[in-house]
Amino acid sequence: METLTINPYLIFDGNATQAFEFYQSVFGGEFSFKMKASESPAQGDQKLDPAENDKLMHICLPLPGGQMLQASDMIRSYCNGETYSFNQGNTQFIAIRTESEADAKEIFTRLSKEAKIQVDMQPMFWGDLFGQLTDQFGVQWMISCQLKKP
Image (cartoon, rainbow, N blue to C red; front, side):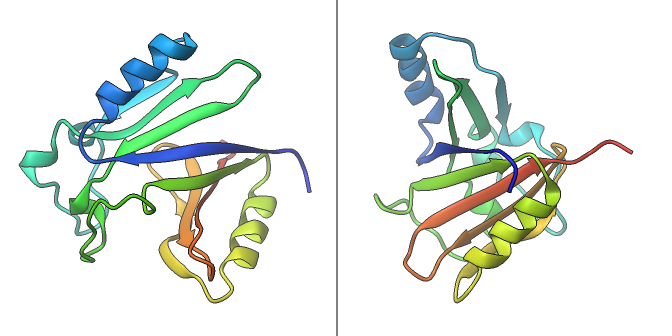
């Protein structure tokens, strides 16, 4: 397996911006990515509730030493028709980023045994191959790699 990076991924209940402004004041640095829900393209039949326009779809804060603190607000419009509520315990993910599509697919497949798949491994609008699941032990994972440009 090639190099992979493991980063914490946090889910907030509408206050990710405030939390990350605080984390930025603690750790320093500049956000490498920040996107509101209203700036993201719709996925399939998903429609964004206008009340969620200002929620964060994704934010990244590079940390000293090469790690990345990542987060989003819980955007219920994008939960594939399932009812999700914000509960401590469903707000943290282990995010793994690989250098190769093959490694990302292999890790996702191995973790998928008896797992609940939230997002099947697929190309996403931001340029990554991405998948999300909760494994058989209740641990939440996000697996990704940057897609190679043709």
